Amino acid sequence: MKVAAAKEDTPSRAWCLQLPGTVDQKFWNVVYLGICFLTSSAASSTITNLQKVILAGIHDDNPEYDGDGYIGLAISCSFTAVSLWLAPSFLTLTGSKNALIIGAVGELIFSGSFYLESTLIFYVVSAISGVTHALLWTGQGVYLIENSTPKTVVRDSSIFWFLYHISPVLGNVSAFCTLAGKSSVDAGTRVMILDVMNVILALSVVMFCFLPASSPRRKNPDQAATITDPASEPKPEDCAEALRQAWLVFTDTHMLALMILFVYSGLQIAYSETIYNSSVGFTLSLSQNVKELVPLTGIFNGIGILLGVCIQTLQQAKAFNWTNSVYLTIGIQFQLICYVLTGLNLPNESAFGDTQKTGVLFNSVPLALLSSVLLGIGNMSIQTYVSSLIATLFWERSSQVSAIFNFSEFVWSAVCFIYSTRIGLYAQLVILIITAILGNIVYILVETRVRKRRDAASRKTAVNCDVENNNRNNELVRKLKDSYVSAEIMTFRMLPEE
Image (cartoon, rainbow, N blue to C red; front, side, top):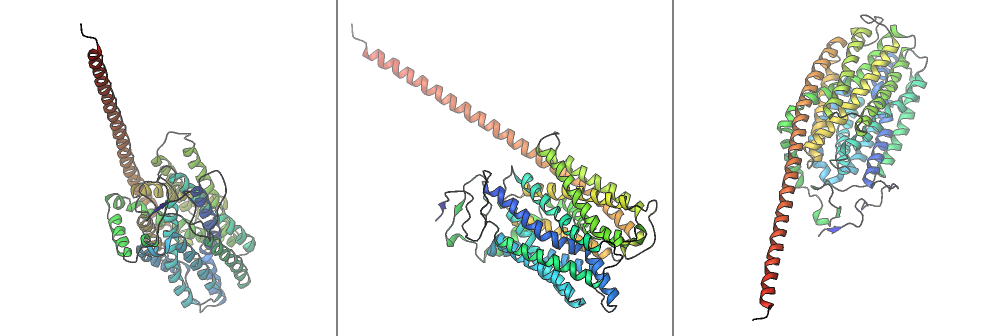
């Protein structure tokens, strides 16, 4: 039996944080989710950013160590991609909050593995963290949709991605201060960085434990929340149905059409968050203390995120009567400019390791930092507008669509990390440019079609309302006429006979 809740957003669990304010509680849930990810990602993104450089430093101290940062990231992304197919089924048993907690613990374990400086342990833990990463990001997508409506999903996505993407700024500031004046990463520096990052990750685990619980997404987003009895809770047999629903979403026409954009999204994430920063750090001709540029590029990437939020703020304020396609195109164009500048500023060999060579035309630190800003603007646009589009298309299948979107991103991030060990920087830039242009075109076509269909449905609803109102008016007129005729008859009958 279902009982209507007295307050729509009052969680049914004790271990959660109730955030005050006049705004809807679900809004604060999204904000707190973003803060949790900001804390976690401040450390994990910094570790990912420095992973290639840290492992290169370990190899310099211990030549027998042959762990490769890109290979480790490829393993992690591969296991994440596979696990994402099972994550929706797992969430039917645990719920989004518990999945987020498990994912945060996985991030902490992965960061702690660097202390051991073992190649085997590093690769094994990379695989384990890939599984927990799948739970973390599927839980994120489900929790975000559970606390949004079709009218607020763009706003809520913008808030989350803003908080998430500025996290590299906080983490990389600490790393930059530690690496200042260094041309290599020695053992003492590595331990200092890892100590700080692991403390932050432990704090994030505690914060996720106090994440407010949320209700599953309802067919009617405006419907009041309900508290269900144990008989209505998800059952293990629902897992197979969740997997089947995930396959149906994956084979949907719109989802298949958007796949090329998912390909680009995965490639640019791997490139912007790790490969580009490492390439800057390997270009020794840029600076005597070139290693400090690795976290510095991460900081400027975060600045680009802030500028991306400003662009989306213009949309929320309706400063321009533009569609989502226009804003996404602006973000991708910034990234295309970045790829051209990078090809002119960094040498082709910088993707593999330290090199004294210079770029084709430039050899400029400011230009390298500007490219990071442009990458951040584009990344913010892609994550926000792609997420909002697929959430609109598959509103009632939140866990499935979240898992598939992240599955595609992680698969192609893994592919990017693998081929980055084989092909030079310039070939990688060509691949990014081609997929960016194709993905942008596909998004425009799909978003335009969905928008026209939504507008047509709105017009049809308006027409139906007008017809219904006319019918009601006609019925009222008929009843008034009948009442008038009845009154005339009664008046005639009451007249005295002559």
